[in-house]
Amino acid sequence: MTIHERKGLTVANRFERLPARVIVAVAAIPLIALAIFEGGWFFFAFVALISSISLFEFYRMTEPKGAFPQIWLGMIAGLAVNTAFVYERLRIQVFQWFAEGGIHLKMFSHSQFFLVVLITLVLVVLMVELFRKKGSAILNICATVTGVLVISLSFGLLIGLRELFSFGFPVQKFISGSLFGGDEELATIHAWGGWTVLSLFVAVWICDTAAYFVGSTMGKHKLFERVSPGKTWEGSVAGFLGAVAVMVGAREGWLDYLTLTDAVIIGVLVGVFGQVGDLIESRFKRDAGIKDSSAIIPGHGGVYDRFDSLVFIAPFVYLYIDFVVLS
Image 1 (tube, rainbow, N blue to C red):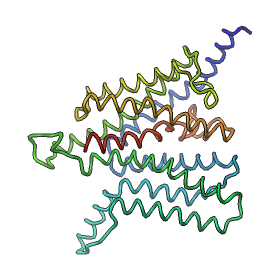
Image 2 (cartoon, rainbow, N blue to C red):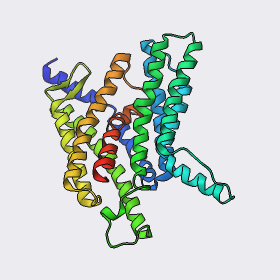
Image 3 (spheres, helix red, strand yellow):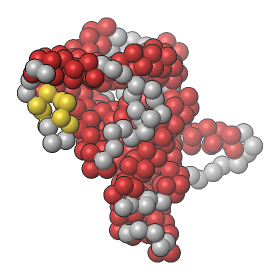
Image 4 (cartoon, rainbow, N blue to C red):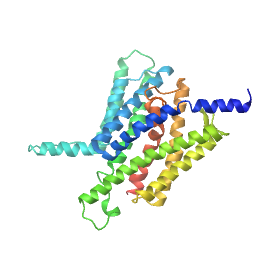
């Protein structure tokens, strides 16, 4: 078999799962878009679900390395971390419910709740491990806590990004000549939140798709062969440019609260750190000796496989939008 024949066979193998990928994408994208634009508890439920499944997959991924994480404790803590980013909404609704009955509550602040969750997680994991007789205590503790910090916290920040447009949005900085809290004004901000998160998803998808097709058909120079042999510099550059183009296009189309510089920077964050997140998960899988985190999504592998880029970029984009764009 010639070199060209072997290369053709390799490309064919890479495209083998493409039909299943397309079918799943066509079915899933409208549901994801609906959850994003609805926001609130609907979006929280969607992200909490994919966060919990991804965390479970991560825990299973650590077991071939001899770790036995406290799966259910970690998943409960992960859900609590997700809830921390919708806590302001929860607190307001609970306050209102009790206030209607003439009862006035004192509740944690957002930061206090988040801190309590993390401290409780660490202390409980340590105490539980004291009584376990399975595997290495150090590995078990590290796997349990790391999963929550890597997976749940990152997905929580995605929830937090959507919530930025519901609570504490600096209206007067971006909308002039309208009454504070007016229906039209609130609808504009809500739409910005939906379009921002959807644009982030689309930028990730375009980045992955461009890198996949360009790398498979024209890629010659390996990007990081030790971690992911199939990825190439040509594909990586295509993915990077695709992510930047999506964010610039989103800014020109519907995200007019962003400047062109903001859009480019967010696109760069997606194009660079999205691919880093993909490589990090590839490193995890290679270390564990597995191909996919699970087989739950036909053609894609696991939920963590599908959202590995989003996991890594959500903190960067959240921090940039909160502390730079909206400050």
